[in-house]
Image (cartoon, rainbow, N blue to C red; front, top):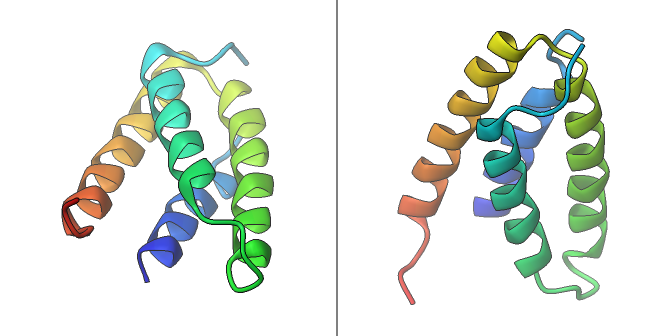
Length: 93
């Protein structure tokens, strides 16, 4: 379920309209998402889902990097907030 929420967060970026490099907030956001995706165990049950998330992450990076800086900031700050919610709902180690 948590992986599905992360997928939804990534898919949200694939629908964002498309002129600059990644802002600092977006770099932080994508670093966090990348770390989360890498932490998913690569077994037969999660392989397809993690592959889809990796592809969506790259697509999202490309789309966000083509946005104006102010739009990047707004989108990535929203993504960071969503990640915080997802992380808060995960079981503590």
